[in-house]
Amino acid sequence: MSQMIFVNLPVTDLPRSIRFFEGLGYKVNPNFTDETAACIVISEMIYAMLLTHAKFAQFTSRKIADAHESAQVLIALNQASRAAVDELADKALAAGASVASPSSDLGFMYSRSIADPDGHIWELFWMDPAVAQGGGQ
Image 1 (cartoon, rainbow, N blue to C red):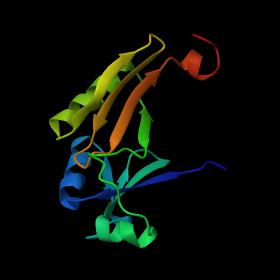
Image 2: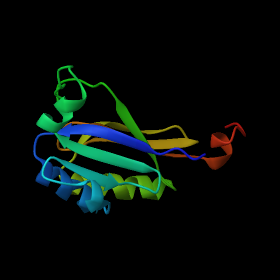
Image 3: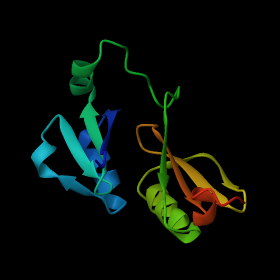
């Protein structure tokens, strides 16, 4: 069975966050979107659920972290090529993201790290397919 992942992210300004992800070329699934939440379709199996703080708080009794001040998770999203990493990172920066850390080029893996407008860190990376399948560096 294929598994899907829904990454739930608290956001301070839902319309701004929707515009940001649409600016990256992602679509919104209207079936799971209302004034408190938006379902961003990243791929057939990956979704980002953008939740207002009030909505997010319905799922946990823990304090919502300020992602601009602390990090609880790094969301790593692979891309088809180095050029695709650069294209998506550049789109994100143009849409309001910031650089979270310097780019990294290990030869077999290339990555750029951006923070979305709410401070959530997205690691955009490409890895040589031979290495990804255990073929070594």
